[in-house]
Structure formats: structure tokens, C-alpha cells
Length: 278
Ligand code: SF4
Ligand code: SF4
Image 1 (cartoon, rainbow, N blue to C red):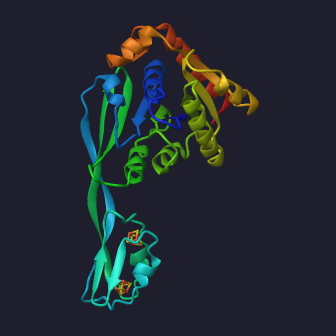
Image 2: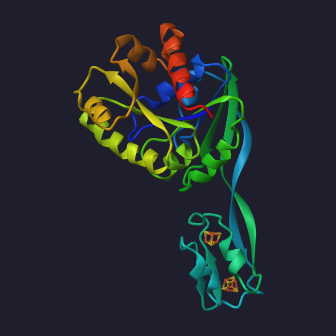
Image 3: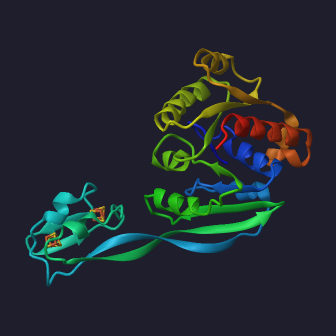
């Protein structure tokens, strides 16, 4: 089963839920898909090793063959290739590597080269198989790294994907194709605002979903009312708790010192699994 853990905004406790759940369930595989700022590994306290480079295709134009017809630039939706009267310019960081310009070129003047845009690192800790992606500094496109990372999902494992925050392309790429999405929020007006956006995304992707309320006890009850009105299951509440906050600030998963929560996460996982049998 593949569960994505997402939230409409950063700082709601998404990584806390992802790491604590991974450490609680059997056959766990955890993929940190926040490739611009991966931090799940801090809670797992492990040595990471590079397992692969992530490449992006980029067109290379043979100007001896090119007749500057502009078919490639007219085709490109991303303005990544521009044709001048006697030159063709390629902007690698705008290129999505779709290969379309190569296909439409009538002179077969375009070939594809590859450039490294990030890496995948991995390791194992407390029985959890872990991978994260790291987008190179200055690279604008996270989704190719997330796609490469998701190829590490092993069938038969219980895979948890820690999504980037927000509702833009990297979060959508992470959630897409998962069996269930857990939306982590907090009971504040900001939490509610971003939860509403996240709910629209998972509904659009037709992924079954439920909510975890983190830091329950702060703020107000508007998140809860919203979920009840929309018939959205609230699957877990984690209270605002001094011990949990202390362990978090020490980079420790709270199930390590509060084993009663392990059972809570196992029950949460079992509930999701039994209601979403794949
Ligand atoms: S489509 Fe091919 S021939 Fe036409 S401008 Fe582009 S590279 Fe040159
Ligand atoms: S590969 Fe796709 S995105 Fe890149 S320049 Fe060609 S058409 Fe544009």
C-alpha cells in the first residue's frame, strides 16, 4: 500500500507523521519527496549513500542540418528553445525534457543530451528502507527528481511518501497514483485555509483521503467542523504536548520514547488499509 502524507502548508507536522508512522508499521519504506528541502532523514538518524544521479533530457541542435524553420520553437510550450534567423538557442532550465522538438524537427537536426539535475540518496534505519531526492541548487524543476524517487517504490512494501508542502506541481506529482492521502493540518485559521486547498487537489486526483489534526488543542474547532460538514474522516488527533514538542526539537521521532503512539500509528495504518484494500 502507498500512502502519501501531504499538507496545504509547511510546518503542520507532515514529516513528523510520516517518520513516526514509518517507524511503527511493518515492512515500511519511506520516501522523502520534498526534494528541495528534504529533512525526514534527520528524524531517522542514519548514514545516507548516493544511489543514483537524476538526469533531465535537453535538446542539442546541429546547426549544419537546421534550416531555422522554427517548427521546434512553435511546438515548445515552455519557451525553452528559440530560433533566430541564423541561430537556435536552448534554455536547459526551462526545458521539461518532453522530446517534442526532436519529433517535430523536419531536418532531424535535434538530438538529446542529458544533464544531472539532482541525486537520490538512501539508507536503512530501524527496519525502515529510506530514500530521498535532492534537487541541485538553482534547478527549477522538482518533478523529475520526484518521479525518479517514486521508481524506488517496492511492491509489497508499505510505502509512505512525505510530500512537499503546498498544492503546486511537486506536491501533486507526489500524491498522484498513491492509494491514500493523509492530509496533516493544525486547528488554526491558516491550517483550515490550506486544508481546503489540499482537499480540492486530492479530490481532483480522485485519491481517497483523511485528515490528521496535529497540535490539537491550540486554535479553534473550525477544522473539525469543516471535516464534519464535508464528511471528511478525521483519522487521528495529536495533542499539543510538551514531550512531543521536546522530542521534535531534539530531532527524535516521538514513538521512540512514547511507545503507546506506535500502536496508534499501527491502528491508523490498519484502518486506512482495511478501508482501501488494493
Ligand atoms: S525544427 Fe529543426 S530545422 Fe527547424 S528550426 Fe528547429 S532545429 Fe532547426
Ligand atoms: S524537449 Fe520539450 S520542453 Fe524541451 S525544448 Fe524540446 S519541446 Fe521544449
